[in-house]
Image 1 (tube, rainbow, N blue to C red):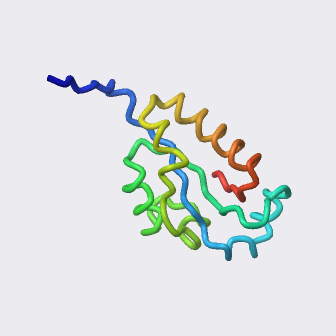
Image 2: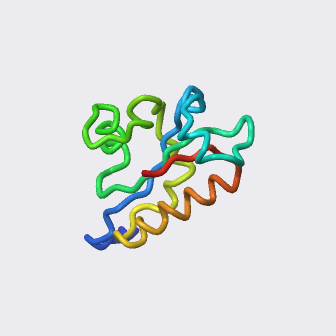
Length: 114
């Protein structure tokens, strides 16, 4: 009989990555934040939340506590880039949000973080 792995209640935070439309490259602030962007790599927003990433994405798109880059240019979540890290405690998610953004930018992605 298989046992379910119990996740501590404090481990309900998530990092998430949203793919952004290519049109975001026309925004000067975004271009300036990504001087080493490699042509052909995705444009993404990296965030953290205490909600399920799907719920958080829906809130962004509805304009509820949303980031302008996600609201205007958000296309879809990219779970292969973040699902393996979730869930985690608040401190872990806060740090992972920064680390994941740095790693994606180093890999040539265009990245925005709030």
